[in-house]
Each structure stands twice: as structure tokens, then as C-alpha cells.
Image 1 (cartoon, rainbow, N blue to C red):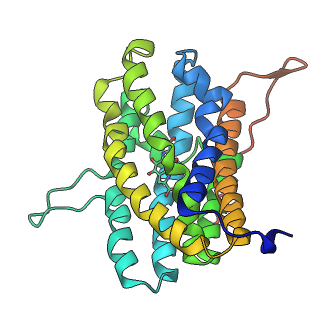
Image 2 (image 1 turned 90 degrees about the vertical axis):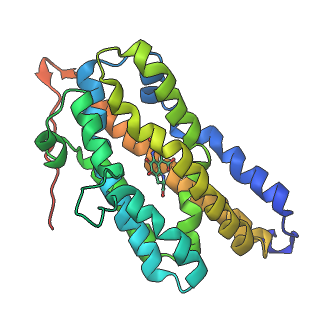
Length: 255
Ligand code: AHQ
């Protein structure tokens, strides 16, 4: 029985978390095609427009974690994630460029208008369902579990670095300033993970059963990212079924 097994040491537990990286979306066929320069301009535009829904949902997810978290020291550090994305305007009112604005600039760099990105008109239902599942997880689960789910960022610097180094060669038509979001995340992700890993190793290391639950929570988030890539790949691939265009369903926003 799992509950009879003694917990892994912190080092062993961290190793098990890192081993989950083999299921990271960097290995998804869509991201492999992106890295190999095989995506069309339309496919990249579809990816940027769909991922925008994920980007604007991250601060909502982090605010949900804060609202569930009763630990002042954790909140003091976690709150910076919101301003990373929303930006923090200067005293004199100068608009800051946070991650959300940087992503809109990425949209411009790949040839999308601000409206095409911010209207969410290009977001596929599958992307919305996967992202909403992540935000609702953070709203409903204990804050420590939501912190654990953010640990896919253990693997994020690698994928950001891949884009920074491959896009100029593979997609020379993309304006260089579009890469600023990924450059920004290189440092932010590493800082985020330090806090997230510390909370996770502390909270889940009381039993083997809890440690196994942490691995399942991380797998849930890996699945969120994987399904986002699945949906974008399908939405951006010209599929003809008996000569008819693949039927694309409109995304529904109730709020
Ligand atoms: O741009 C990304 C980001 O801000 C975050 C926050 C973090 C979280 O709290 O779940 N995860 C995450 C990720 C971002 N970018 C993804 C990408 O591939 O560009 C990777 C993703 C992650 O690894 O979870």
C-alpha cells in the first residue's frame, strides 16, 4: 500500500518532479514543428492568438491562489506574478509593458492586429476549455496544490530559449521585438520556480501518498498544456473532410 511506503527524500522527490518533464509540451508535434521551422505564418498566428487566452488567464489563476492562501510570506512573493503579466504603470501614469502587453506585441510581430488578438475571436473551444480547467483548479483546490500545478515552469526556460534561438533563422519575417515576451520569461520563470518548488517540496513531503498526488497534479497541468497544443494544431491545420473545410466551432464567452 502506498501509505505504508516512506516518503522520498527532498532530492528524490524533486528528481521525480523533474522526470515529468518528458511529458512537457516542448515534445508536442506542434512545438517540434515550430522549432524545426515547419509552421506556416497562419499556423504561428493561430498559436499566438490562442495562447493569448492562456496569458490573460494566468493573472486570474494567480489571484485565485492568493485568495486561497493564508500564508503572508507566500503571498508577498506570489503577488509579483500578477504585475509580471499586468505590468505596473509608473507614478506619472506611463504605461508599463507587462507580459500581456508584450504578448500583444508578439501578435503584431507575427502580423496580427491588436483587435485580432484581444477579441479572442481566433481562440478555439478546446483551448478555452483547457485554460478554464486550469483557472478553475486554482479557484477550487488548496493553494499548495495550485502552486504545485505551476511547476510545469521547471521546463519553461528551455522552450522560451528554443524560440529565442530558432525563430530569427526559421521565421525571419517575424519582427525581432516580438521575442521580448520569451526573454522576459527566462528570468521570471526561474524566479517563480524557486518559490513554487520550495512550497511543493515542503507541503507534499509528509508522505509518499502526498508526493504521488503532487506528481498527478503536475501531470494534470502538463495535460492542460498538451491539450492546448492539440487544439491549436487542429485549428490551424487545413483539414478537408470529403472536400469540405474542417468545421471550426465558435468559442463561447459567457462573462
Ligand atoms: O508564459 C508562461 C507563463 O507566464 C506561465 C506561468 C506558469 C504558471 O503559473 O502555470 N506557466 C507558464 C507558462 C508560460 N509559457 C508557456 C510556454 O510554453 O510559452 C509555458 C507555461 C508553463 O510551462 O507552465
